[in-house]
Length: 200
Image (cartoon, rainbow, N blue to C red):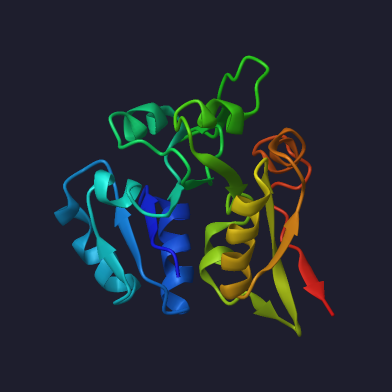
């Protein structure tokens, strides 16, 4: 199993960590503050999740980033080279606390994100489902909750799809980020925030 790091301990980052812990998968969770600020959070999630620095989380094989959009640049500044590693973009281009859309100047949020992690194999995933559903049981009424995935590198998508399957969700590949990224981007994407269940 590849090592997993999480940068961002907000709703999505914690929900993803909880989904991992529910399946006995190890990961390192980091935020922009002192690691000690996460001790209680990690203790509540489960024993397979450990606290780390941004640098430690960013050094893993698969790194999920879920940070407030206005703080994204600062959160990724000065980190080790991402070349060749998988970085999951779980961010949404909104400005809290009023959920105003960020100004992207006609670009997709994942295109902006990719510029902040040069050399990474970027996969868009884990951003469209509400955090309590991501952290909860993916199996419901005989089916599995759907998680969308998109990316431009087939092997990277395959590895993230395998992780989605291991977590118990049903992954649907939306193709390259130029297509899938626009479909799940929140706000505005037609698939954003949809709670879909795959039966059969």
